[in-house]
Image (cartoon, rainbow, N blue to C red; front, side, top):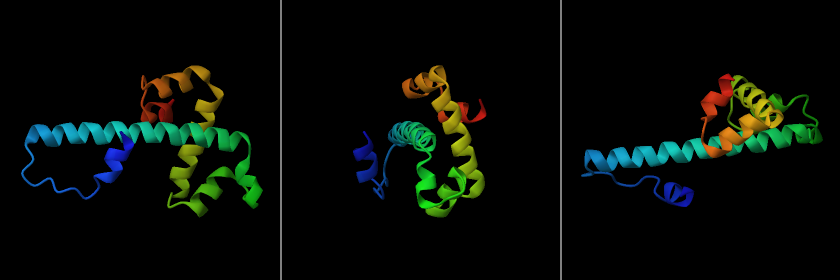
Length: 108
């Protein structure tokens, strides 16, 4: 699924019907949410191991803000959400199953 989403970047949608565009949009949102859920899961494991400290960073969010194009605020939200999901098995399972969205986990 993700390969088709990535390979299709820049595709020409000229002449696509509304139904085709709607279907593509739903596919892209589903892929985005699945990737975000995996980012949260990976960040939780990474943070639990304090892997960010191996580079001398003072915090997980500062490491993310320095090494990615995330703002400090976005990095803080990711770390907070990752810690919540990593520490709560029910939330982790619900997120992995798609029963809750990454946005739902962020406000939990």
